Length: 169
Image 1 (cartoon, rainbow, N blue to C red):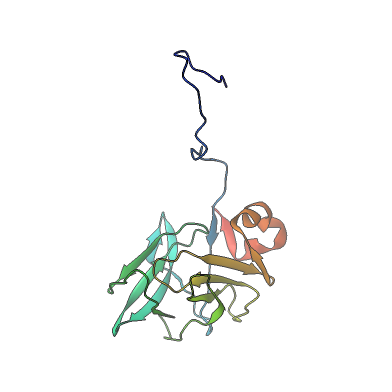
Image 2 (image 1 turned 90 degrees about the vertical axis):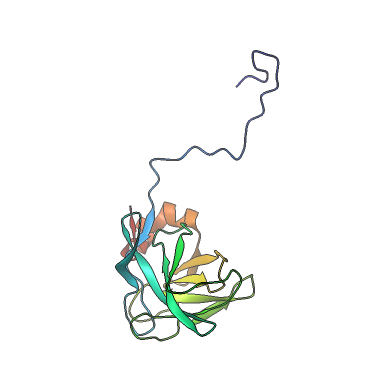
């Protein structure tokens, strides 16, 4: 890259400009469960052709549903039959049995990280954690007790056994 263009202007690379990597695989949650073993993935809500995660939501005396993208790293969320207000902390429940999803840690925003289990046995060592504050996009994946980042999932999910729960797209 030349320092100056043909008009003598300084070329400054734009660091925020990203070129999409067409070879990168997306990791898609195939199944996740409430503490009673009900699968939270279903075809009632879909994101880019993938069945989404459906949760029941209670807040301010109202009840409705929230749909979450099953693609790890995608922050797409929708609400149905309820108006969710930025910053509020609603109750998140299983849409099948109404059990409240348990918290496993505190989010850095002050709300709770609730667990969506990756197996029917409700094991906290294999779970997805999402913040229950509306507007907070903090989420985590725990596999075999270790917190995984999106980068680690991209590079090692096939070797670590994580592909049992997540599948490349």
